[in-house]
Amino acid sequence: MIYYVRLLLILFVTLSFSSAAVAQASEPLVLNVTVTTKDGAVIRGLTLDNFAVSVEKTPQQILSLSEREVPASVGILIDTSGSQDTGRSKNALDIQKQFRQGLEGFFNKSNPANDYFAVAFNSKAEVFQDWTSDYQSILKKLDSLKFGKPTSMYDALDLALEKMKTSRNSKQVLILISDGSDNQSKKTFKQVRDKLKSSDVALYCVALTNAFRLGDVESVPNLEGQSVLDQLTFMSGGRALFMNNSQGPKAFSEVFELIALELRSQYQIVIARPASLAGKESRKLKITASRAGTTGRTEQLLARTRQSY
Image (cartoon, rainbow, N blue to C red; front, side):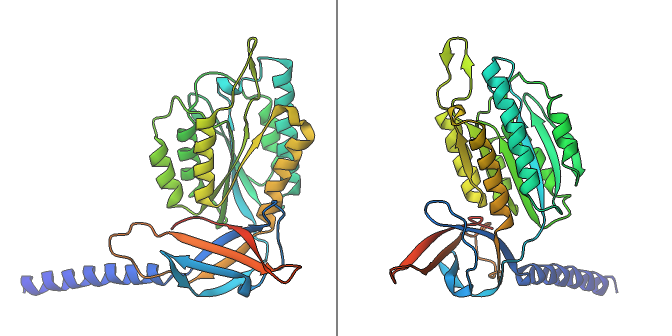
């Protein structure tokens, strides 16, 4: 009798795992896709025929395409480390003010149904504003942030990715304001990259490349940090936008408003989730977009979405 009971338990557990695997494999995959020209102009009004999707180089059937705007859950990450120390000069204080104006412009141009949280990080990453639909509460707290100490950017990203698991919207976005430096995190680049890769979160970054003067020496562009930001944003379907303090406050506002415009102009493309591939923990995704050009030739467009799932 005991033998048969054990056999039934084994069969039940096996069937349960199999059913879960089948259910997961049968769930459709929803891709948020931004399409622009090579000059960065956002493109609307495309149809199914304008897109092609492949997984591991195998073409996939597109089940549906929608241009309907959906609200997003957005995390704002603000670097308050020494490299961003706005107390160094009047010029730096002006930059802090411009960032605030830029964020306010982003909020004003974004979907009113979005919700937000905010993280500040230097040697430690902390949530200074929990989920809220009232973005004014974030703006009011910006002036109280204290700048200085080392940088734990990877820890901040890890914290934000964990926080995003409690979001109410399926469309998830992180906006990182940092130069990409990290000299304090317990988490590594690889750990954060892998965690971002396995999520549905799109990462955008706004970075100053030579924002501050250290004594009498102008800071040089942080090429390593820029490379890190490029890699992380590209793989998530977002983008890194590098600013120069000589561009002025109008450029700051334009950058943040561009992010808001992109998030409100995305396509949702649905494909069937391919069956599990042996030995593959993640699968490479590729999406292309094109349209008929004015001269009759096909114009290739830039389509951005996550690079794997």
